[in-house]
Length: 348
Image (cartoon, rainbow, N blue to C red; front, side):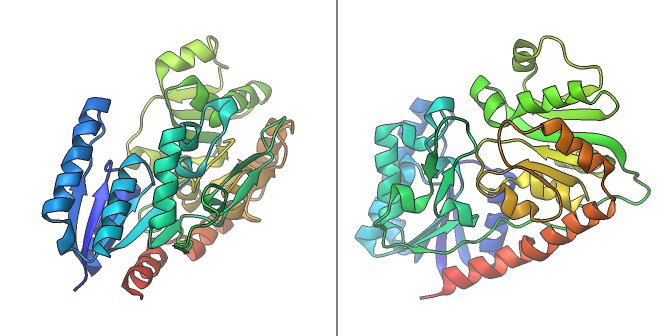
């Protein structure tokens, strides 16, 4: 059986899902790289080098999600030992949006390490077609380029799009739950730049313009929210944190899910909400239109009327939410991801 080292920088839901897939199909050793502080991260990199010198040669392949400083070390030893390196590409690792200080490539040295990884990996696994190459024209006043082919145009790595996978048996409307005229958005937001990158300002303003509907904002820091919005509209509920089970309950009650991001990889919250039959309203950037398809509403330009698109979604036939769920089940199930990953990792 193929022996793989699964490197991980954190233990988010989608990283743990991949870990389960690897453990079911390969002889897997999980290796945690800690980056709690710069000092901790520095010593983790030293420890990583020692791992490769002592044990790294024993494995057939290396697997990691997101390219960064540490993946250049993995790529270097993969090259030295003649081992396969598989890197899942998200969004931040192939982006540079200076106006919002977003993207790993804004840091020149960090960008160099990432480009080395992109150039020397065996196979790059972007989670959407847009992560191969994109032109973001949504942000007013400029065109922002990104993706693997933009930052590493000469890479010889094989590029295979493998979408994130979601469990339709977990994310669904619970029996007896009724949809309300509620619009929800979910994002981890604790910095001013993220506040604008995730379009939280547009969501709050839409709530002000639509007093007849309820809005729910999940995931933002209370301190930041008070700083950015001293007076919230009365029809907006703020929830600083919700665990996965709570989120499923929120999605199940909400008729509309809003994602007003200015850049994304493959947004998990959007797919999870659609599985719970939320009608999606999203911006026309990177993978968002690809995911929504014809089962929701797309905001094509930043100056469009966001509130009007939410109103249209609220007035839409609830069957559109059912269609949204079916789209995710058909195109982005966890079973499809497992089959695709096993096929790529087991291939020549």
